[in-house]
Amino acid sequence: MFREKPHWYDYAKASETKWGTSVASQMAFIQSESSFQSIVRPPRSKLLDLIPWSRTSSAYGYAQAQNPVWREYLADNASPLARRTHMKYATDFIGWYNQRSQRMLDISMDNPKHLYLAYHEGQTGYRRGSYQAKPQVQLKARQVSEKARKYSNQLAECEDEFKCRLFWQIGPFCPKKHS
Picture 1 (tube, helix red, strand yellow):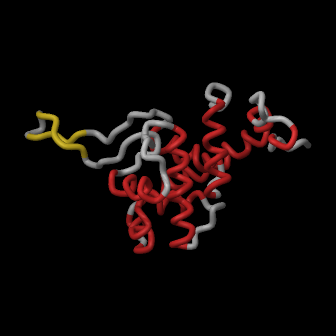
Picture 2 (tube, one colour):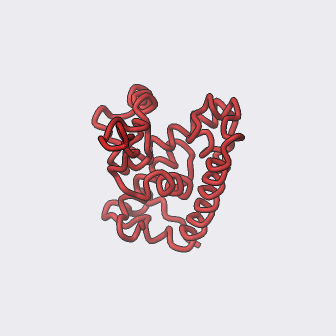
Picture 3 (cartoon, helix red, strand yellow):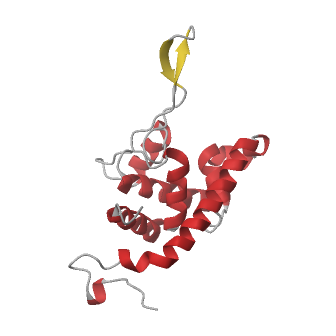
């Protein structure tokens, strides 16, 4: 995916540096939430099983951030121009949210399964254990964890090609690691 869209790597790496959520975990969250589609919304309910009605949730964009928590994110630190349909802000949002979960719930940043459970259920729902009665959510969290592990392994093989590819990334301005 980063070969097609190398700027996505830059966004995810900047979020990892700022908030601590790995690039692989961020991409696993986004894959699970939106399948890397920027304008995904939940389906509409139907009135009288015929007329499209309201949506079941306000979730939107790559990260499927809901309106209330998106407003918190904007108020907390984001650019007023932030959009849920832009990968830069989706990765930053996920990093921000996971850091809050780590701080509030003491979930390790190296535990994508439980970070995802807190992401899906909200920090209050996670604290209450609401996911324990939801086998589908638990399954999805395990899948996110497996996907993060897979992405991490893939990234270990090719990450250097995404670092230092811009003309100004030379010498001390280049975070490239050499083996």
